[in-house]
Image 1 (tube, rainbow, N blue to C red):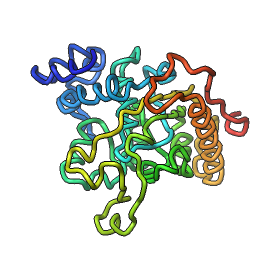
Image 2 (image 1 turned 30 degrees about the horizontal axis):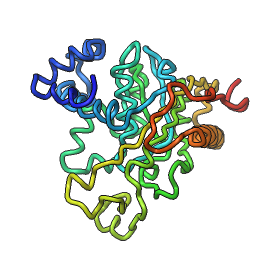
Image 3 (image 1 turned 180 degrees about the horizontal axis):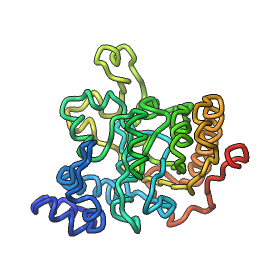
Length: 306
């Protein structure tokens, strides 16, 4: 499905149209109670919009989607970007429609998003979960896919001159992976850092408005809503790497020094992959090749494996 055909489904019953378009995903979760608030009706209602962004506006290319397991738990992590965090939504679209065994990814969202009027419930209904160790552990014990951005909210607020420079990963995701004996999957995303070029972060206004950052972009705050939220049509590439089994026993989860060391190694590996992919990119608005010119699989260092 392409172009404005995505929006033609809005004239139909959204849930019925979604079930016809994504039967495997629908049958997997339809009628299932979810303690975190996932709502199939809301997901189906918004799916055409995000599919339009994925297929037609950003023309997202994803490599390595087969590295995400069709069954069982896994912890996905990578670079965060975009002011409005669309990176998770784009990978969700891939999992929903392109994966041989479609699944939802439960992204852990910071508390700030749940304080925004009308946004908190919408985030829950579309599958995201308030970030906490308890919630993440419960999701993984339920054999779900969990998405974490170890840069946190700081990652989406980078200035344009800081794009694709990873902020130090919080080691909590490593401790979580060891504690739950969950494989981790590195994901590198190119494109998101340029859709809302953030030239200045006005900290005083951020404090005044209780926002984690106050960006000044090409459209914000100059243009009226919703024009000030119109992203640039940058072409995206998402590279999903092979799962990594850290190989440490559960009791090592309490070793914060070890977790910090592993988190830094993983951060540097993702940074190297981002740097390589950026060197291969022809331009912001040119579609990516069907396959990258090199195999950029993530290879954990010896200190992370047994």
